[in-house]
Image (cartoon, rainbow, N blue to C red; front, side, top):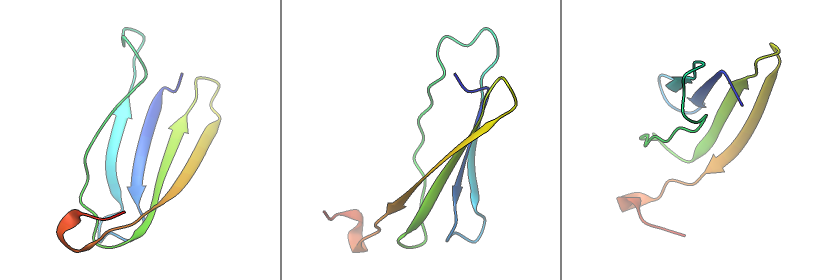
Length: 70
């Protein structure tokens, strides 16, 4: 499991939107959050692993008027 996870919304005025740190007493290495996006954009998650390596994943999140859409 990751020691830390950071979430970035690359199209927002302030890209850093969330940071989660997991210590040795953490029950699980899961986190959840809700964020507001300025427009359709890439959301990036970067995880720091115990061995010092990093894992990154990116997804395009579609933003629609009124917050609804497919």
